[in-house]
Image (tube, rainbow, N blue to C red; front, side, top):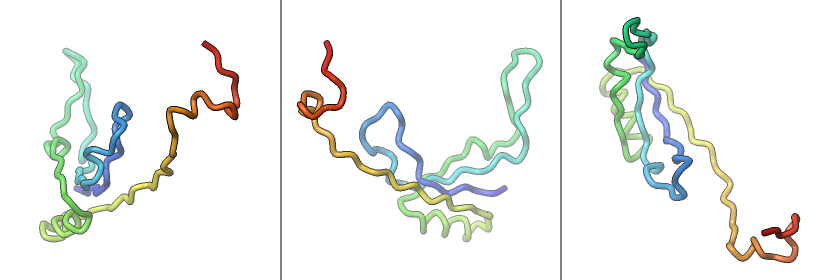
Length: 101
């Protein structure tokens, strides 16, 4: 029952950074998912897969795991390179490809 502590990546459908500032704790699956023969759904008897905990800081999540005796793995977030772009750059003369409409 190993826990992963990480910062979730932003959703591809959002432009902001909402819900990416907090740390998340998820448990690794203990048993594989099985396909039910009748309906074809996947199921698992592992209830910890459904559990997700959110923390304000990485230190809070690590302290929780140490207090409860849970082995954990911290996954550091990758730094993203911010791009400064403006709407006016779409119409700039120095634009590489010609403007077509």
